[in-house]
Length: 146
Image (cartoon, rainbow, N blue to C red; front, side):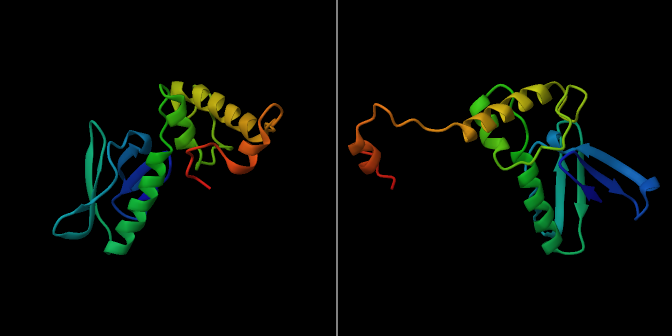
């Protein structure tokens, strides 16, 4: 098996010519969970495919599950810019083709746009002009964060 942010590929044996199933990672419908009573086993699900697989032991399944959670958190939500910013905050997409021809398809340009805005926000300097110095030092009344 190979597993990346783009595809989960399943092989009969350790040979690229023996590909059995290939699934787009962004199409996975849920995070991977263990199959009750089958240690080391899980199911990869998309809307149209389902592929159960068992690993050598539970430790490997947990590692694959942790990777799947990270990959699923990088999935684009082109209809909600704040959700997209949050999802992309932990992803390094600097080497990914974010055009329509890339792995995210029509969502690619939207992701590129949001990433650019995130860079602008990071580099933007905060202006404290016109703000009462009390609030700069003490915070906003009622705000319990320190």
